[in-house]
Length: 122
Image 1 (cartoon, rainbow, N blue to C red):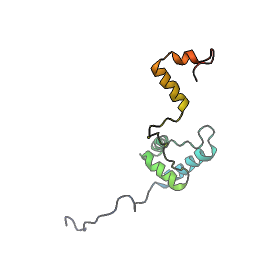
Image 2 (cartoon, rainbow, N blue to C red; image 1 turned 60 degrees about the horizontal axis):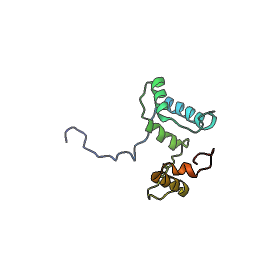
Image 3 (tube, rainbow, N blue to C red; image 1 turned 90 degrees about the vertical axis):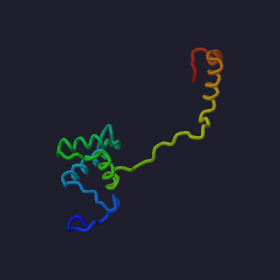
Image 4 (cartoon, rainbow, N blue to C red; image 1 turned 135 degrees about the horizontal axis):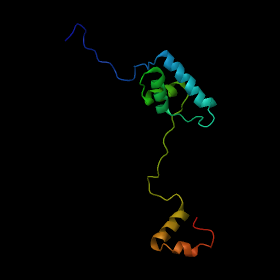
């Protein structure tokens, strides 16, 4: 024991409460509800880095964008969606396009020869 208080281990993350100042929380509620419901051009498109910059400019507190994202998820403003999966098995999605690409590899001008005039390659 180095000091008078005994050493104690705590879990990281799970039991910690997200604590923001009340004025920052009110600001986030206002901004996030506006983005979700009222914004004309960017409705539903959240830019958490921009909100972080606005909080820093208005309140002088630096808050990471991921903290704002977690707050928005917890409060129901933002739904996290999984990223689009890429084609990992190597199969061709569009067989006609693959056929045209293969023809272009063998003879680049063959695709132009077989195409009717005025249409271009599709």
